Each structure stands twice: as C-alpha cells, then as structure tokens.
Length: 254
Length: 69
Image 1 (cartoon, one colour):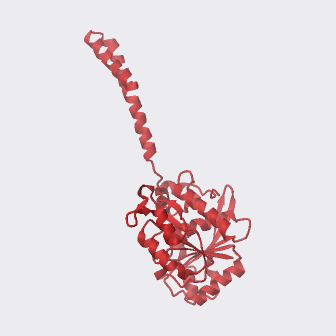
Image 2: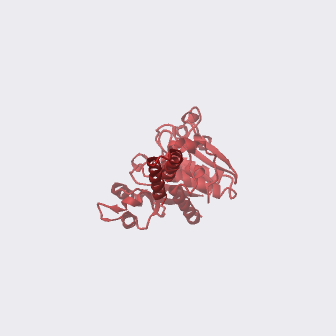
C-alpha cells in the first residue's frame, strides 16, 4: 500500500480536498479490477470534512454512526468499524471507494493513527491510501507517515511560501506540485514580476501541473457532487487538468 | 450584406408609399423589417449560448458517469 497526501503547509483553501477526493475517485475507477478496495480515503478534517460530506451526500447521514472521532477518543477499539463504502454504478462498470471521517474535533494521536494505517494496509489491502488533512496548524502529526506528498498551491505568494516552508518536515517523496485555480489572464506575479509557473518552479523545485480556475468546478462543489463524475473534460478545463494529474499519479505511485 | 438589402427594401417600401402604391409597399416594408431583424436575433441567441454556464441544479440532476481516463 502506498500513501499520499496533498499538502499546503499552514495554508487553507488551496484545493487540497478537491484534488484528494477527485484523484481518489479516478484511481478507484482506474484500478477497479486490480483490488477489492483499490483506494481508501482518510478524511482527517475536524468535524465532518467536505470530502466526507460529499461522499455521504447529506450532513445528517453521519449522525449516529461510528466515526474516527470515536476511535481516537477510545470509544471503539477496531478502527475499521468507522470505515464506509461508497459504490457507484456507471455505464462503464461499477467501482467503489472506502472512506472514513472525523465527526468531532478530537486529539488524533500518532500511535492510534499508525495502528489505523496498519489495519487499513493488512485488512483492506488497498493499493493507495489518500489522506485529506486540514492545514498543518490544525492537522495531526503526519510527518513520515506518508510515502508521497503532492504540494498544492494557488497563485498567491503566501500559499507558495507556506507550502515551501513546511514541505521538508513532511518526509516522503515529493510529487509534481499543483498550481490550482490558475487564471491565464493574470499570469504574472506582481511581487516577483515573473510568471506564476516560474515562481512555483523556483520555490518548489519543479514546474507545476496547472489546474485552471473553473466555474464549473465551483458549481459542482455547490451541488455537493464529485466533479470527475459529473463534468466532462470537454466542458470543464479544471476536470481535464485533474484527470491528467490522476494519470500522472497512477504512473508515479505504482 | 443583409442589413444593406434590408435598408434598400425598406427605402423602396417608403418610395412606393410616396407614389401611392400602398398595397405593394406594406408587404415590402414587412419583408424589410424581417430582413433587418433576422441576423440580430441570431446574434442575441449566440451570445446567450456563449454566456450560458452550468448551474449547481443542472449538475445535481445529471447521472453519474465514469471518469474519462
């Protein structure tokens, strides 16, 4: 099992959840014949994270069910009791994604987290564990726990600097950075007087994969839908770019 | 081109009214109006089509389709 996190240091709102959820779904579909549970998504956002909310389809759906909050609070001993299965039926076959979430803000201890990851690996045997964590200041100590780190930034100096500053502490193999919500009309950074692509490359050491700002993605988010399952690449440049990044991940991770 | 033809037909209609051929002038005038307005209507439709954006409701109603990978 490989593990992956989309990372922006202490910066929030860069699109980590959108990328984590969409790439998890794309890879779960792409690897649907390779494993029973090809991808597991761990949503470590305190309260109910957006990714889990979209997968559950309803805020109230989490009510009364065991969650990782119960596990980390010591109320349940088997972490897999807090895992759920989302299954989709499409014209090109069925596929599924396993996910788990926090319902309350609890102390996510490193020891419990390691035991959880170990259980996922040995009992579910996924090919990939995707961790969607909140900005670093609020997130559990994940350093050294993941194999791959995908930096996600927006065309914003503080996002790039926060990601660059904390990236080294995460450990793991660094993947191609994502420059999310990029607007081609504003391609020059007024601070550095250089193209945003160049600024990201200088800061993070590699030219970024660009995901353009896309109103269709904003609309899908308002509808609480998973973009890659509802929008065609021909009508959404953002979805097209996410699919390209998922293909890159598929080649890089395995 | 259509605008020029429309204006010529329109002017001809008024000319015919001037010389008293009202029954010929009226259909000619109507034809000129149709010619003049036709391209404008199409342009408006095209503009509307270009500005159309997906709404959350429309996305919600769509069936799930497999990711295009």
